Length: 416
Image (cartoon, rainbow, N blue to C red):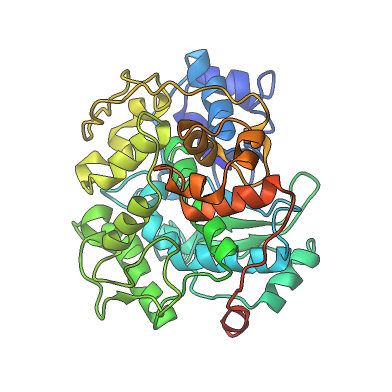
């Protein structure tokens, strides 16, 4: 994740400690010529570790500030990135293709995780001082183009031979400090929300890769253009906020092609963008008491008054102990159960493809080590309340050292 903020808007001790590169793990701040100062966090397999690094170096030192998405007529785009870990999937290019196309298809529906100011819209609804046009469309125009696997392979293999585009989802070439990534350029949110949205997208994309196909909309380009108009332009140009705009019906509806819906979501037709977001949240629920669940509750409230920019103090405290967190101006998080989780003793969290959410779910179900999973039958795993069938199949395959082939709709991907 990139972090962009304007130096004159944040406390001097932030500039002295991290922005001057004198100490701390958040260093490398530089001027990228777009206005704010920028640095990066990661890469990391576990999204939570990126958030922890950021919070340790800021709030952990008693340093917080009013996170901002713009300054005057300039925006602060804290872009987030996804990449494929080597050796996880049998066909890496199919994995890249499905991941990219899933991001293209679903990113605008996840907009509340990536927009800091729901009331005014992305980049606080600011306009460019030059050239005209919406600020967000200047730097992250809504991406509506899907790529075939052959095109994706060209991006991945020719990793230094291109530049990213100014679109909401784009390939970003490799350099000395990072690999090729799928970049989400619209984000201007605090890491507490942005990384939550990134993790949710990663979970959906991972299940899509496992299934062998990416979600695809009917009337794909026309539908996405209408959704981007709702999440980009409506909050900037009208009195309606992002949440209100997302709850308005899209002309013609939102329909996924038969058999090409969102993995884990049976419904294929929706009237509003927010219905799509709710369906994703329901299919990929977060652990009660976790920072992820707290962000999920804020988004699920569907209330522009609960905008993250009205909850800045809470964002810095989002990883507080169970029972010690409240939103400044948001929904009640309810009673947070203090679930005692046994610590893994044999590397379950180091298994390929097992992130924080899956590991927690497996531990809660009593599967604490790879040995436990190996000894269990598939039926044992899939009947556990917190472990879904796909997770069970994936984990069983991994601990046994086999790769199971998924029958992908590769022709449909090629024709995307």
